[in-house]
Image: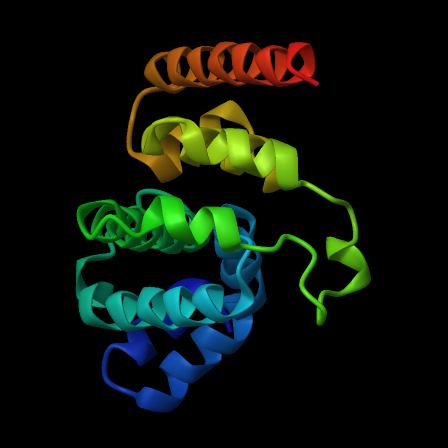
Amino acid sequence: MDEKELINRALSNREAFDEIVNLYYRQIFNYIYKRTFNRDLSKDLTQETFLRTLKYLHSFKGKSPFIFWILRIATNVINDHFKREIKNSKLMRESSRMSINESNSSSDDSTDYSILYKHIKELPTVQQTVITLIHFENKTMKETALIFGRSVAYTRRIYHTALGNLRKKMKKDIINF
């Protein structure tokens, strides 16, 4: 069954939507985890992503691949979460307590990204999103622009600005080491 047919069935059939969840869950969870580095939070945000996907499935127009549309929803869910955290003044406290290498991490998560993660979290949300999509999700600039809902030129500017900001933060950390 092709993707369009599955989406059309999912509009009226819960089992068809479950197929969509089964098809894309791992990819969405991995993307969210690479932004949060917290398994429990990632599970919650992945669930929220699929709830929003179900809610807005009728609005999918098919102008981009369906996975890009879901990744855009996931990006919005993540950004909404971090905005709430900032508003509640909890983000800084949680990020300082957060452990990158959780005891139940898989071999895929064995690399210690704690310093890089710390600096990525200090970037503006839009820059975090672009860096994550390109470097951790291996999306092209064009794919990132589609997911992000912006032009390739704008996305490229955000990407280069983010890399520059990240480079400055990393250099400062190395100098202070």
